Image 1 (cartoon, rainbow, N blue to C red):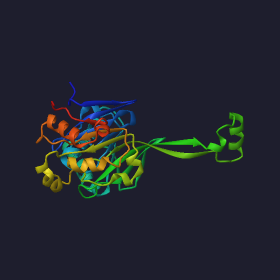
Image 2: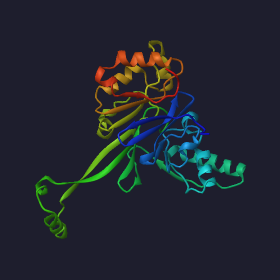
Image 3: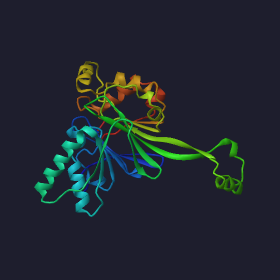
Image 4: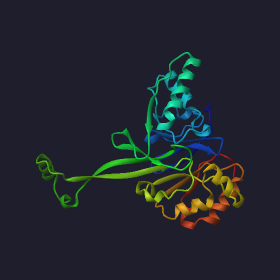
Length: 281
């Protein structure tokens, strides 16, 4: 029996798999991209994914990283790769070492510290780019970007032999093209993420919207989370085709969350929304 009852959202050829409730657990994976944004309590269905992209060190987002690594070793898989804010590397190493001592076996890991602007190659044509968020010290979000090459317009009408000949002459016939597939904000206060084009134009935006009631504005500010009013402001400048909401609070019933979203957002914005959650609505 699987350890978790995970939500599954299909968008074209991608599947977003996960669970997210504020203060309880957040884990969001896209198997086709071989990435898991945050690890929650390490659902066993996601142990096979090779790259965990941690946004910050809070327990509900990061508690399972040692179990994830240990289970990969136990099942004969290669060491998992964990990207995390650089300021967390020391504490993460201490936890891994401590669990290794408790378990009696060294837990292998490929640990990569990142800061905003850093990139990490996931596949030959796929990279993860870190960007700053406003939540805890060093917290980051991640965009997964596909790297392509596109033929320059002046060579569009050439035949294959002609293109081959130009390449032999060392002529650059194409130019690099970045295709932002998905951006994951993690936990964050409002930031105008539209200033980063690769986030604003990501096909999929995975964003927290934790609080929905007027009297919860203070809670949002105190915890450095997003309130529905800020979320609506954020979306005004974004150009994403799909928006997945994470980190909803159990203080507000799911039916009320959906009604508030529908009342607050413009119709074309609301049509893009999916909530990643397993609670009954």
